[in-house]
Image (cartoon, helix red, strand yellow):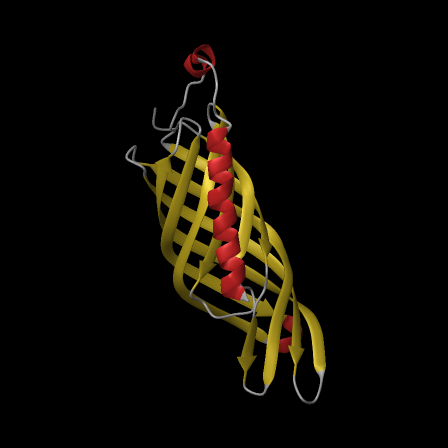
Length: 199
């Protein structure tokens, strides 16, 4: 089920980029008025939704659902499509542990920090698709289950970025990691703000 949802998500991102690209049929004057600008330093603020996953721990199954949170990325563009990012994300999620003896309903808190390398390809002036990968460190806390642990793994993702004006763009993103846990993959939507600190 998780692989099917991931496939549908990636297909949705790609089809959305094609639709947006086809809608970019503007007149020559409108094209001249649009100034695409790649800022060196940028900030991304985004809302997160996590689908959740089910894992088996000893004689119990732990399932996550209804994850929601916020993410903040600080990035640097090299100017050749290659970006470097430091990302922070916080997610709160409903957690259910089922065993032969009982069922426990609670919530879990997830804090993660990652260092990513991102490659973006511009389909046209305002629209770009991107893929990213990196190293993630995650802290998981589930009070009623006495879980308080950290883990690290490989993060990967893909998405689209659509510039609405100079120094501002919309972003839609799929992200997952090799860390095994009930959080599952994450979908994000947010705003990219160019900071122009190095100009």
